Length: 131
Image 1 (cartoon, rainbow, N blue to C red):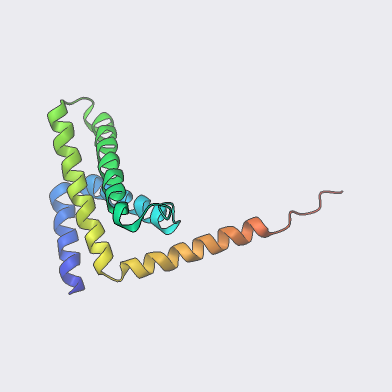
Image 2: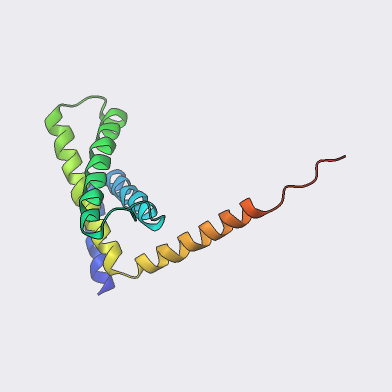
């Protein structure tokens, strides 16, 4: 079953190009870190999905504009919109692959480790500076 999702990801990667796939993956990572940090815990569970979609749409439009500026120089609004929609679709596909596979648990363990190390570093006492 997991090879099926890997095939989907590779097809998306080949279809849209590595730059677009990387940008869409970055959007999923950013949203995942925000969710992991419980940024949205004060919002009722039933309304969080709308916030997630709004963040994904905003990120896709912003990322498409930056991509066009860096790679193409200039483009019309139609191209910006089509690229943003393609990024959003890819973002949602990657997110769904992420949620139904074991990548979700792996990402949580990785974030647990990163935050544990970061909090241990901040709790360490600074060295005495008397010399």
